[in-house]
Image 1 (cartoon, rainbow, N blue to C red):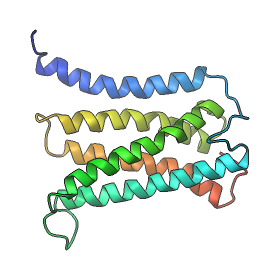
Image 2 (cartoon, helix red, strand yellow; image 1 turned 90 degrees about the vertical axis):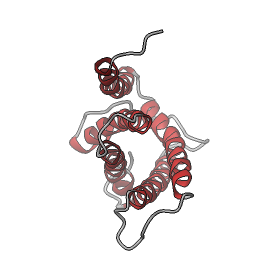
Image 3 (cartoon, rainbow, N blue to C red; image 1 turned 120 degrees about the vertical axis):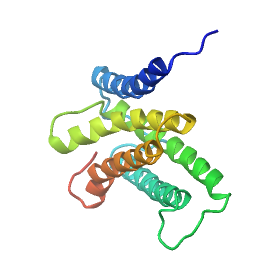
Image 4 (spheres, rainbow, N blue to C red; image 1 turned 45 degrees about the vertical axis):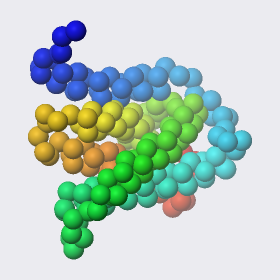
Length: 182
């Protein structure tokens, strides 16, 4: 079997994350929202509170990931070189963050779909779709040895930024009492 050329592989590396983001968007737009749906047996404000807490835990894991990434790249002031155990810790925490994001995303898509009714909700919805595309991009960048050195920190930074924007437009909004839900 022939190996794909660099151009085809590069094109796939760009198209796959875009396809994931567009796919999540399409599912969210075509899905009929069920505002009464629950998560882990909770409904109403209780499920929104749970999502806000899970989202905050996800945000905390993203900050840890950012700090570990900076440490691995020797960009964490005063930390010196990262010990070898930091690399597997970064991978494990990344996996935990991804797994933690899934019930949140499932509940959001199931209960609300992709909602474009106001700017905050639209930013939140679209960022949620992009988040999984960026995750795919980061996984592809991690696996590639041909990309420039800045690609991995850029993908990781984009992932942390997407999580932060998701947290800002939902969990922080909820905890600040700015909205009765979402």
